Amino acid sequence: MKRKLLFRAASAVILACVALVSLTPFVYLLTTSLVSDMSLVFKNGIALEIQRDMLGLSNYLMLYTENTGLFFSWFKNSVVITIMFTALSVLFSSMVGYGAAMYQFKGKKFIIVMILSTMMIPIETLMIPLYNEMRAFHLLNTYAGVVLPFAVSSFTIYFFLQYAQTLSKDFMDAARIDGCGEIRIFANIMIPLMKPAFASMIILQATTAWNDFLWPLIVMSKNRSFTLTVGLQTYLSPYGSNYNLLFAGAVVSVVPVIIPFFACQKLFMEGMIMGGIKG
Amino acid sequence: MCFGVKVNHRCAAGVLLNNKLTPLRNVFRSMIYIPALTSIIVAGIYFRLFFAGGSDTPVNTLMGFLGLPAREWLFDTKITRILALVFTSTWRWLGMNILYFLSALQTIPPELYDAAYVDGASAWQRFRHITLPGVKPILIFVTTILTYGGLRMFGESYVLWPRSKTPGDIGVTIVLYIYRNAFGYFDMGYASAMSVVLFVCLMVVNFIFIKSFGIGSGGEKR
Image (cartoon, rainbow over the protein chains, first blue to last red):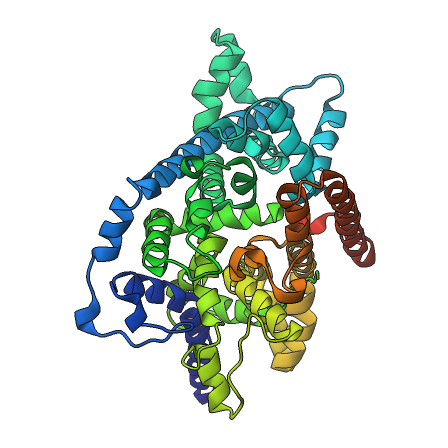
């Protein structure tokens, strides 16, 4: 019994340490973003000396007014791109996955293998050809340029394919006898049945799109068309970074992910666990 | 210039989180998980300051505590730079990997442990002969994606050093180097060649893992 108690205490301590390491950056970002005079807080690197009377919302006001709302055009870009990306990705991937799982057609196996084999190709090796492609299509600096190349990924298709395989085909036959078309079967019967799959994929794709950095950095080259992640790093510079804007901006960029996370933790974790395959 | 990040002691943390004895495990689970939700930029902003040269930063305070001189972690030597990079990416992906182990641990039937306990197996033996084989597919899977992710690392290196310039370019990862050649100097040919090499490397990593453990894509299928 004593050993059990000791074990409990030890594991609690270890986990608390890990949790502390995970969470300090957020606490630090949040508190520091409220300090208006950054020179009081750190000279070279962070130091945790924050007094009550330093706190205020001036950084956020500055973020709002700076460069005629530049930050908020980034925010808007991020929101639009996230929504477009998620919607397209979930819609088309679910269609492909469902189709490949439910219908028999010539060359089906070959197509599935082709789709899955692209899962092995890392996007980093594709950035140069894709960039040239986007340039040829005149999609640089557009939302479509960021969204389209990766919207339908083999991983999402695979996920929906696996999920659709668990669904019963009897529903389809019953609906067909009642005179339901194939598209209506998908929209009215299968989508409600695949709701859990949709939920976790929406969450996964939305967080990926929101946090994506490399691809928006390549496609977006105009100040106004940056996404949040790309825009934020422009505040960093070798000649002294603008920490006031940086910290406030970082907090604003994290909040839209953290709040839904606390609202539906389980869905998030499930979705992200699946998504790890994507790397 | 490139290196895989392999931190597999997460397995131990996973065991702790799965153990029903551990108090408040759900709270810990979500707390550890939060970093995976943030973008690399936010993490980078923090860790740049975290590893900066001032004597009051957490790392340097710890160094002072141990009686060692303060360091400029991001610029000092190759080792400290790599440590900074590894730490940053570990911080981000720790929670996620713990969750993988967790899902694997939950598939191990508890009867096995009871049977082993009855047969007089020690805690270590139980871990070695029941837990380890049980999580082996996930262990391989996580090692693969971490090596993969390490080779593909880009954002960490981009953000930790201002305008991605380091003296001697030691903090530069392959992908950043490709990026810089392609979109900084517009040397697309050279960059493409490097992409091909990177692709081959990543494929080799994949195949080594698949072959050496002989489980096919078991990690992915789970």
